Every structure is written in C-alpha cells, then in structure tokens.
Length: 405
Ligand SMILES: Cc1cc2nc3c(=O)[nH]c(=O)nc-3n(C[C@H](O)[C@H](O)[C@H](O)COP(=O)(O)O)c2cc1C
Image (cartoon, rainbow, N blue to C red):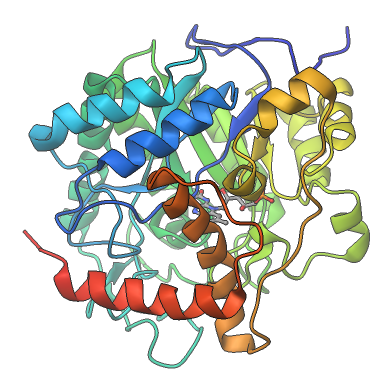
C-alpha cells in the first residue's frame, strides 16, 4: 500500500499523528531574560498549529540554565513555569496535531558571550571563528550522571505541562553528539573510548526520559547520519546507535547531519545533485529503513510536494520534517495537503562575508519567527545586512540582560 501525506501515523507508544508533515525544531530565541516561555512563543506555535502540521516540535529547550546555546533559550529544570508551559503546549496542539518538546544540552557549543566555561566530554574547543567558543572543561562522572537526570526531569515537566512527549537532541554537534564523536570524546572512562562507551550517554538519557514519562508518551531522538567531518561520528557508528535505539523502543527517529563545524543540516557541503534531489540525508534513511522498524522522520532540504510524496510513497520514511520553509510559510502544510503546493525555492541569505554568513542564514529565519511571535507576518524580503545587525544587537543585549540563577 502506498503511504500518502494525508495518512495518519500511529507511533509505537499509541499516539496518533493526523498526517505526515512535521515542523522540525527551530531555536526561537524567544524566552524572556529569565529563560521562561513567553506569550510570543504561544502565538508562534498557534500559528504553526493553524497551519496544519501533524507534529509540532519546539526549538531546543535547555535542561540546565548554566548551559545555554543562545541567550534566549527556554530552560525547563522544574515546575516554576508550568502555567506558561501549559499555555504553550495547548497552543501547539490546538488543531489536532501533536506537540513535543525538543530537549537539549549544548555542551561545548555554548558561545563565549553566553558561557565563559562550557562543559563537554573532553576539553576540546569548537573550531569556528576565533574567540567565538571557549575551551570547555571536561565533565566529571558525577556531572554526567546529573545531566542524565536533568533530561528525565525536563521530560517529566514537559509531560505534566501537556506536551505529548519529548525529542532528545543528539544531532548537530550538541552534548549528546559530542559524546558520540571520536573527535570530541577522548575520555578513557566508561563514557569514552569504544563506540559502545561513546553511545552510553545517549542511551542513558533515553532511559531517563522514558522512565520519567512512561510508555504512552512520544519519545523521539534526533540523530546525525554522520558529522561530515574526517574522523568524526560516521555512518557506520550512527547505524549501530540506531540499532541500540530500536532496543530502547523509541517512537520516532529524526535523521539529520552536521555540526557547527560542518553545517550539513542546512545543506552546506552537500553535492549539487543531493540538493537538487532535495532530501539531504535520504540515502542514509534508505539504509536505516532496511535495518530497523522505528518510525523515521527525515529533515533537511525538502521543498516540493513531489519530493515529500515520493519519500513517503516508497516507504523510505514515515514523516517529512520541514524547518526553514515553515519560518516563511507557516500555512504550507495545509496548502500541501489541499493542493500539493510547493515551498518557495530555497535561497541562501548572506552578506558575502564568510565568517558571518552561517550566522546570517540562521538569524534570517529566527527573525521570521520573532515577527510571527509579535503577531506579524514573515517578511520574505528581509535584508541580510539588517538581519546581521539586528542579530548582533539582539544577542548582545540579551546576553547582557540575562538573569542567571
Ligand atoms: C533558525 C534555525 C534554528 C534551528 N534550531 C534547531 C534546533 O533548535 N534544534 C534542531 O534540532 N535543529 C534546529 N535547526 C535545524 C532544523 O531543524 C533542520 O534540521 C534544518 O533547518 C534543515 O531542514 P530544512 O531544510 O527544512 O530547513 C534550526 C534551523 C534553523 C533555520
């Protein structure tokens, strides 16, 4: 039988998604200066819910307020913001789609203006832009165990607030990915060395979240197909992790790739033929499909209804992940379902200065989210220079005003 975008999907935990389109995580940077959720977030996710997504996923929510990826990340450590979290959860699932919270710890990918001493598996700094990232301190075993507990605690609060589950961020070079990679994990204890030891952190985080939420909530993992770096987390090792995740009975595996040092997740370094075919990590997904039965979500590069339909129809994936297109066209899912609409063709946003342009591309989309949070429409003509200047201003002001503790 051929699967279509309109079909529902019943996940192993029993939760039913009404269609096959998911809004992938995009860091909104819309918390207040205490890292609390805001009315802007409620408004933004209402807009995506109205747009018809079957699964809504938050941008990364941090499990520890001492460890931020950006100054205005939401942090959930306890129940202090339960009311606003509940409002957020209610908005994101108000039209029948489901809504999960992506939970994360940035590890070494915490910029110097946010953290002067980030923590990581080993003391190896991110190698982009001089002075952008400080050399991290290697975690003690006690601290590793505490972070694993934190993931469970955040998952528990998410569920209590009304989210349908969580997604553990183990991709894009953040802490869990740092444990997986032989380039960033040089530990000689039980948390490093062999591939089995390097994946221990992720598997323990998965167990911690499952224990906190029970079997009826969605437990998803976002994983790199590979890091796209010589000597980094490879496809072979990724496949071995996938097999272990199947034993843990996770409900949804989202496939992506790349890190801050090699941003393959937004198409950098991908072959022209791959970009043309749209889904950047499709070949890897095909291999995963042959190995495991976990429901698969594929994110990165999808723009036309045709490409989305064909990835589903041949059974390679179960769910199509969309990020940047939904930052400019929040109603796209409804239009795809009604009339096979295509997203606007992908365009890169930059000022022509290499050291800034990765930042400009991400900020351009983040600023569209800020517009929607403020009740405005996205602005597809927003200038790259304006994006850069207001992005630097926003980060500067917010890191200055950030209230820690
Ligand atoms: C502004 C912005 C913020 C992002 N933040 C996150 C995030 O918090 N967590 C995550 O897993 N991926 C994040 N991503 C990556 C997207 O989820 C997605 O993997 C990537 O954009 C490729 O999909 P697309 O081609 O549909 O945009 C972000 C992307 C953008 C553009």
